[in-house]
Amino acid sequence: MRLRFVAMLAAALVFVVPAVHAQGQADRHEGYYYPGPVTEESYVSRAETLVNADRAKRLGFITGLTGEQLARPYWPTFVVFAKGAEAEKLIIVSTGDSGFRTIYQARALLAQLTATARGTPLFRELKVEDLFTFFDLAKMLGYRQIVISDGENFAHRVNID
Image (cartoon, rainbow, N blue to C red; front, side):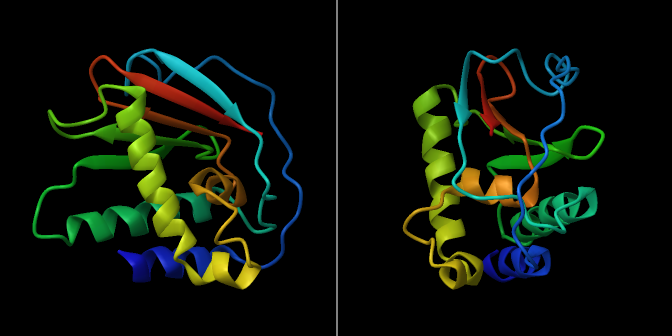
């Protein structure tokens, strides 16, 4: 997983520039891909969006991560996909009964994704491996929102500023 994850990040890295936020709009994915959020938070990122972070890069990141998951000898415990006109929303949904039924289980997965991101050459090159989180990586790639859900009753939304 790490090699493709790293390759996707390396391909996205050129320059860092501020992101431009779009106006908020109704969440048309709520109720279709996941239940309405039980909890919600805003994360003010320490990172800036990469200059070449576009829809194609965000979809490429998802494709790389999914490919790594499917290459394992067992079924993924969660799926990731991007939605929105510019693929600016990252959605993570559990695939099994042992999924994210609580905010604590959701945060545990997000912490694991942070550990993976911190091990990448990108974070080491920028010297942020002990500071940036998975949310900061999402911001760098141009994601504006992350939703994590058990796919049944629980959903947590993180708005990234």
